[in-house]
Image (cartoon, rainbow, N blue to C red; front, side, top):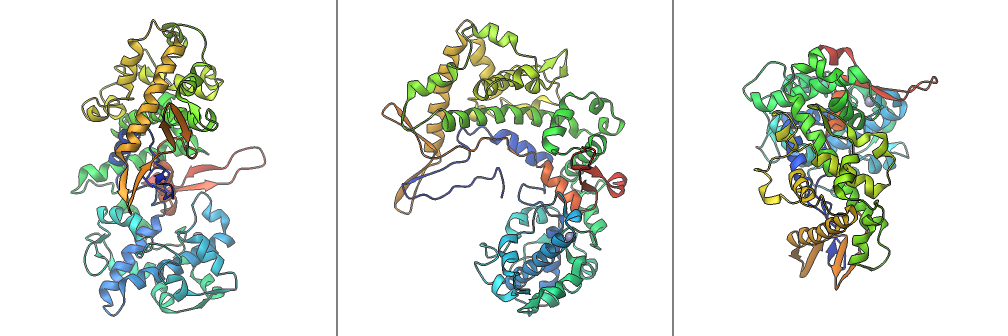
Length: 497
Ligand SMILES: [Zn+2]
């Protein structure tokens, strides 16, 4: 499931929980969408793109087929083949997430039989009536693989009917069966989502990452450039934890500034801006999580909660506290100061505060190509509070105050803001006023309704890497006995891209 999509979980007491308690995620999330259109946090599998394109051609050719039922049956069979192949060849699936509907489909395969009609019935392998088309739909339309039309969808302008028919040969016949012995499915590994034997691989690669500039230059070139950037970074660093490691390299490793291939990608500075804002936003989210999850036991007087952060800070002036922090930009050069040992050794709350101050310290210091992706006072004027510029001004006006007093005040700002955000998202549903919050302030006390999530917003690099893995451009290899970690590597296909 997505780590960033808005989602509310229903609860009986009229409170339901929001996933964006401070509403600080919007700016970096929009910039990620801009730089990586067509790949989202819920579309990790390249082969579902072509599977849906194939189903669109099949239902438009065979008018006798019920489109929704055909889609569901195809997804069930495709999922079952993938589950079986992943069991037999886990190496070929390393780093790829499970087939959609994995848990339900695999549980039903235990007796050696795939009951297609029962699984494809409504409410079974997928809750949504259109199966797993929903999350992919916008991306597949953007790529021209499918288009709206017919009862469900129609082949898009980039579709390749003949190629898809060959690539998914046999799938439709299997999908029409009500029950299939699992042993028969083993002969269809060419239909597996890992794409090891997928005939349409290079075709789909050329659609997702066109190297020629096509009519929709802006959109295509951004996605292609991002893919080229990741491929090169994977080749250079062979990371285990992709987002974490490559973020730091992109900011602070001089090799990413001098590399011949990376230097020509205009998208690089933009991603640097997004990475820096992601770190900044991450700190707000983790600070809030720390306050709610760790500093609250039962009902807590607001003043006590406001003191929680202060109590972990030294008794000194804000100006001297700020001076002791490492700089996020040194002589025009970006530094990953957030990971400096002095910062890394701090306890959670103070560490989050330090990250925020380092982030705010970059305001006005970034190059013209990086800065707009870090923040925009123009585009964020309606949600200015807690932006890097807002925090810099807030701190500058309080340099003579004690850092403890500033933390006290800042926590008060967060508490008030969380309640405003929750109220603005509340609605009257099913005869009940619903407020999405995990923390409620009432009569001078704060109550925790449930735990906060924290964590960073997604760069979608991990999903893009999974998609590229399905396209044979990168591969996740096992660690070895000499201590090398499991890691991503570039394949020949990726190098030629
Ligand atoms: Zn496979």
